[in-house]
Image 1 (cartoon, rainbow, N blue to C red):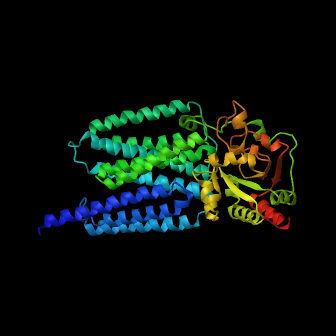
Image 2: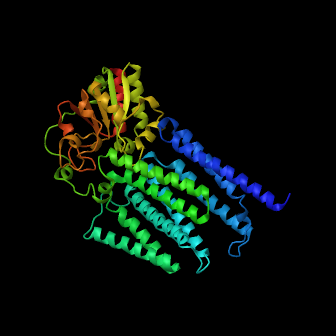
Image 3: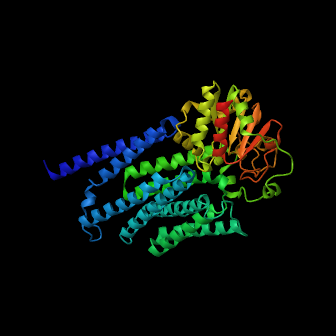
Length: 477
């Protein structure tokens, strides 16, 4: 048997394994499409990625000398880099609080985009001068621009979520004109790079790509960050796919395309759930205007507040209760107590379900992740479309840390910043209980008229503390 035959057979084997890995990625996405299969999907995706990494070390190209560096040194550098990544990522992922999960997703996503950009640049530096096809240069430029936008944009999203800077839109005079100028400059320099294959010009494109990512994200407010994270995730996928074309790696092309396509689909679904177009989310600086009500924490109209004992009796003798979680639940780390309250009510024969708004929280699926951490049964989780038909027959809607996602102004007040956004129709329940720290409005900066409705009762305080009191009250009712 000749060496060429052996190499062909090994290459065939790698291609087969990469095909199975690609199937694993598709199955992982399928699993992640529902809370019930999310854990399994994560494990399948992680396993497929591990196999892909292991197979990479069997590639004959790994034995080649690159830029005069020996195979042994290349291998050592790669293993050191992988070890450093593991040392940073594993403790960070294990110790991160659930309230900080959105910013971790943002920064990890940004690192992926930056890595794809670096790979593209490295390959560009290896191109033979004067004999490179234009489409190869375009693959590199695409990976560099999109990867840099994802990297710097994700860094700003991280800073907003981590409260290292204001979460509200950052606007300034001539913002749209500056954005347009930077975009036009990048387009012109891309053409110049395609014609000249100039490294200095590509470096300028890289810098402008980083600038574009920053100015692209600055005017986007915290309420729109879930959509932003999804979009930037799609950008990273596209950058990875571009680097796959540059490297001639079918697996990277498939993986990047899957991430890019799923991110775009999720972005579109979330935009629809907010009742707004994607351009409106990206360019309207939603939340930048603070109303008078938001500055004072509400108006002077009286509201009805209750004690945990009174509300506990109401819950204990209800037939059906809906728990509507929001970001306040995440901040208070109250998901475990919410599940305890639901179990206590179920033990008394009360039907309990959770009504989940698609953009509640700070990232796609944030509430689902929190409740899954508390081992809430999947059949109790109802998406907004499933929960709303149940509301007219629901005795009590318990709103925990949500505001804009249940505000009837989205249906009744044309001109409101949230008008047209689908909401959880808690106003149709027999009684509404709001767990809030204060009367301050949500991120949209507008009052929620439902707070002043005669059937609404307020329970002020930390969500976790209030839920613990409600558990005790229901048990003693």
